[in-house]
Picture 1 (cartoon, rainbow, N blue to C red):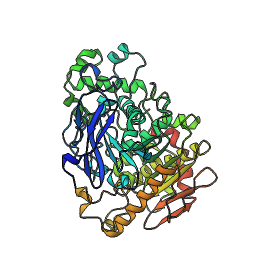
Picture 2 (picture 1 turned 90 degrees about the vertical axis):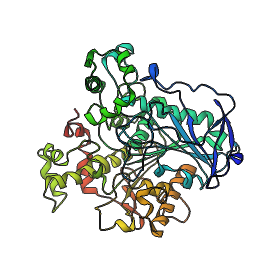
Picture 3 (picture 1 turned 120 degrees about the vertical axis):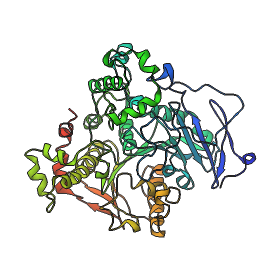
Length: 497
């Protein structure tokens, strides 16, 4: 329930005063600019500071979503609403906008293969987490070719300059949090980042980025993927293809022409193969090396990490542009060994879907956790809990299927509204308690829940969130022993090298 504007909370941040709304006994601030609009000459530049304003700025409506190819985000997430290149806005839910409160801060990074999504989606409503005693932040970042882009003209203007503009947006949000979150009752010295899919991959990228160090203190990577980061050369090839698709002169297009192109045209490019989805690009200041390489060298931030995946991640294959049957063909001699791991699965397409889950997600999760464990505590999870009404109808928890339990937003999203039972809501409370405990204490140890011990190369433990919540040992060991060894050639298997 929203209260009248006369009772709405006002906070003062560096840029000026904001008036939010009261909803569900929380103070909520929507559509807060964290960077200047990335339009015109600011297209494909680092996020620029927000101009200060006078008076009190209303913060009662979400900002527009960033340009993307579809109106609907991931299944179950809801509609993204109006889109604009002017989209760098964030939202805050807080139970107590008092600087003395020093509440843990939970910064959510939405998924969508780096091409779709928005922080304003109903699935990501921060109320349930904030009501536990936390300040929750969601936000938009630049997507598709407007967020991840290179071209000879851009390279000539700024050699070795930024390519991952969307990642720089995420870093800008974390800087904003450090500067302003105390005004909302948050503790800038206790910031947790968490995200799913491209958001989970973003968590790992931020652990790996020299530019993000000191801006957060722990992270949860939900369903990050082992698909390798792109090279700058690949990014330029995609940029040339984008210029051609818009009727410009390919490699000869000028930066002025590219910056003058209507923003809406870039959304359509995601559907024409001219984007870099779903991977980041390595070789700029934000991401100097591939994410996996940085973890393998032990150069990532030594901070507590939770990382996990779901029981039917293969649902994302189409979004990622992966052909399951073709993936099996590319295994070559390894195909025989892989088939032995899945007795009774004979069709290459069916086998490919199993392999997508276990190679690109489950094995990658284990590899990252094992690499990170010597530097900081690492916890692994596997999410297999299906809403009661879906059991027997779908093979497992789809990509993104855990989010509704993390945020407890079953009542807010049309796809789940008539689906959730009392048992499902009880599970959502338990999952949210684990996430909040980690945000608060740096350990996922909520009261009255099963203990979750860290995982490392010697203690192969995974918390399975299934019909029961239980710690598993040597989880999928035979499969993961095979697939972890294939991660470094995954780029070749997916025709990305």
